[in-house]
Image (cartoon, rainbow, N blue to C red):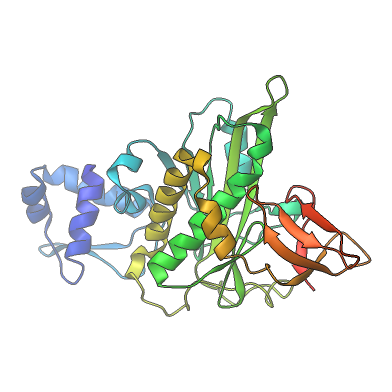
Length: 328
């Protein structure tokens, strides 16, 4: 743990009172100058810390900040040692920026931001990414499996997100094939996986799953075009986990994706994916199909294809890379 992380930990442990620089220095066996530098660095990251002569420092309320230190505090050591996390206040798009760097970076570079100015979803849709209330996170992966299994990465991430929310909020989420997470009847998360394929060996040079989660509703609510479907994990006045909720979500999500990815060949996530499917047994239509033919969803295949029945009895498997569906 870095000096900055240790100072932040002490401030959190003493958040209801002031703790002097001398006390911090003594507890951590560092100089008071090192304490001052750590506090300044935390301030630069956006943490609100009050400093008063002869009293010391106190962590103010309202410090819901996504940071590397904040995530690392809740991240398992075996995972923390394998990943490289970068946190941003604002970014164009975590996927776009990671794609620019993919050729030169190692696997498990993770970019996370509090705001995206050019967030993107599937089918070239915009992804609303307001500041301060969501989590926008992308992972650089270098899979060894064939390119035709790349679609399963989105499936894997969907399960990881759903389980993270269920674990931390004692919730019951559902997955709308292939990339949306629903909670309390509203969409709270979308996933976009982008990849580069090596045409010589038909394997992936890299895959970048990007995940956007609405933790709280933005000030003024969601825009008119999505307000009927978009939702948030917690109410805006929720005090669940205090100022640590978003960092806890990031840490748990990173752990789950790390574990599922390293056991990818067993595809253990598919069992959970099917159990959480909100479409099995429902009637849907293909978004790009003007006829809106009703299709009965029978199941999800082991390759994450949606198995549907046409009104003439014909059975078809839909690939998430080709179509998007909505309940009729």
